[in-house]
Image (cartoon, rainbow, N blue to C red; front, side):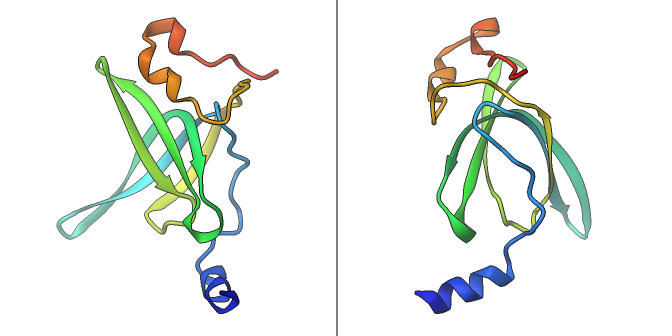
Length: 113
């Protein structure tokens, strides 16, 4: 197992922001359209962080045109350009799946001061 960890360390990113549950983040994702490549922003609330090491992922949720959209991003993926912390949230849970059932202001997370 140690050999696998050594191989995985080569592809791990060094300068990751401090992402916590409840934070609002803007993730720049590489999108390939034919021969072209561009960056697309996905902004939302972090509702879950899973795994560890090279397989660590975080789930971002936002409401777009009245429809909830969730995307799972690997921390160390080459397709994730950058992760920008917009604001830190104050929560008391490790997973915020209850936000899926809430609408409007009830789905907001308080800001950490």
